[in-house]
Image 1: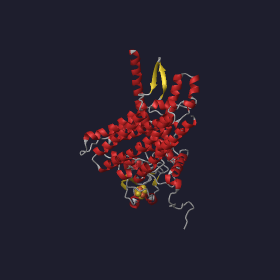
Image 2: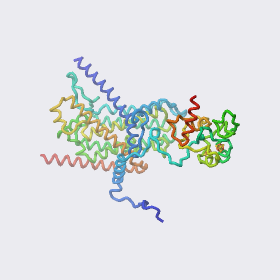
Image 3: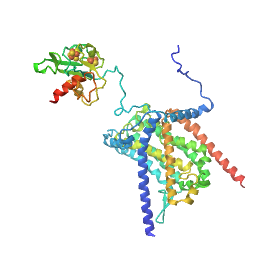
Image 4: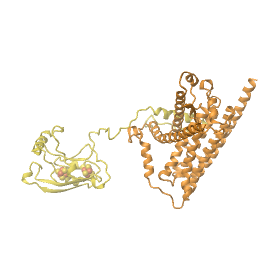
Length: 353
Length: 184
Ligand code: SF4
Ligand code: SF4
């Protein structure tokens, strides 16, 4: 029994380290991907000097960030100034704990779930951590003791609060369909119909609302008002330099990765792919699991691509447009979505009575 | 007056119906950016690939040698006088009897400097020269971190004496002679 626990713990630790590393590497290469995608969309070449096709560019950027001079403004609150980016990074990384990366695999007879923590309130955990993320921005902006930073931070927090409401309401409609808060359970549900019972079929409007809110929550264009250069210099990170600035920028990419993962989990069947059950009958279960993980990552990459595609297409919203969209369009729409979903569920229940 | 047929009329109508949701506009924009991903990239990757200069391109100066490989410049100073940017300075010297093969005229430029940071590459020096000694070539003054390196002396300006096999020039014969002399 003790041996079982030790091996389970070992696999857990390996998984944690793996998820951590993969998250960081993907976030790192998202910066490269972003620049490359921006380049091809603008008929340019993009970074291509560091290594073949510029694939060492993220390392060069990182090295440069570390070697830059570290400036902490004299009038700032030093403790909070350092806490800001740390918090942003921490909250960005914490979310990935509840994402189910793939079906269980068996190693030496031990069942290893490819999910760090299967908590039964997974979605609530995600929402909670995401809303903590605004503290990183808010504290950083406030501690800088700079009007532009503070304005950026205030914008960030009001934007987050406005869009979190719509996001929460969109998720409520999803929960009415799934009847469970556990991400693992939600994904297993979607493996029905030969792995094609994806929630997007029942919640197209909900997904649409969710993706808009995800853009706003990650402070990505067209909702990147907190760091709007033309109005606020650098927004909340105006005073930051060196790796502390790097942390802020990096946490944005991690957030993007994690929210892509969550969108894929909630609406696009997680690691399920069409005819996964038929494949499992003819192939080794572990192999199928690995393919499923690959499929999941492919879905994530598609979402990351959409994030970038939108960023390099749309101009930034004006602040009043942002607020109007959040409060007057998205929230009423998500309430309508809840009503429609409830009506649909009642209708189907009565139909099969 | 219409100059081209490409001008577009400014559309200021108020947004209506679906347009108010911005969605048609957003989708249209995204389709445009997506299409651009498959367009040919017009970039020329500079250090590896170089765009050929126009035949009348005015680049870094070159001080020519004559058909015998002797320097053509006689240090008359007309180029310096013509230069609107006052980029050229020189010091004249008298040719020794044993230097006949090196300098074409009795008087030659012992020092000849062009400040590439001042030069505007107008080509007036080339036009002023009575001896056809200075020309603007088709290479460019390369970038550097140090200001001092932009003052090009004779070491950089005078046409190099290259082995005939590498050399493609109307003065080829003169170079071969010079090269043979140097090799001995
Ligand atoms: S190119 Fe014009 S500016 Fe340059 S050295 Fe000759 S005359 Fe002067
Ligand atoms: S380059 Fe021509 S114009 Fe200038 S000093 Fe020499 S001979 Fe005279």
